[in-house]
Image (cartoon, rainbow, N blue to C red; front, side, top):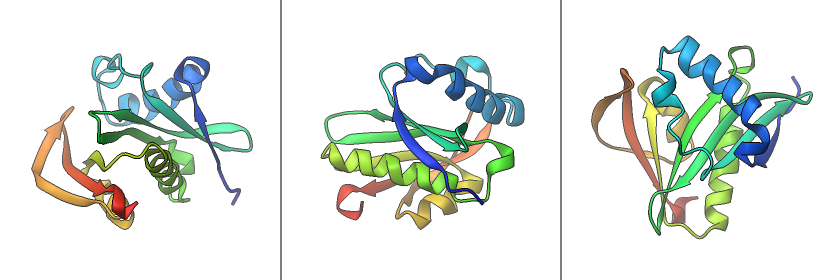
Length: 147
């Protein structure tokens, strides 16, 4: 197994790779509409790309919600590269960037079936299950002192 390289990237410079991954995972596999997936917030977000052998295989983004809160969103790994720890490495890179920004609270809306990944990284479920884009999700949070 090749270890992934995680890079922090600008959306405009890498939108083809980011969009291809998200289209494959969210639209084609999960049936999320393009309007929901591409919400117009990418340009103002910080993006992460995971590469294996110079091929972009995973992505995530972070967005500041308010002065103290950052949300990690759009975590996606191509099917052939799952179960290799790439999602966890993307999350760790995102958490590291959030720590460097001095933020206090991290939020994710986790698809219910992958909530365990976030729990392994110290996130806790808050509230009840809800549907987002027709998919069961749970809100999860992590305080920066735990990062």
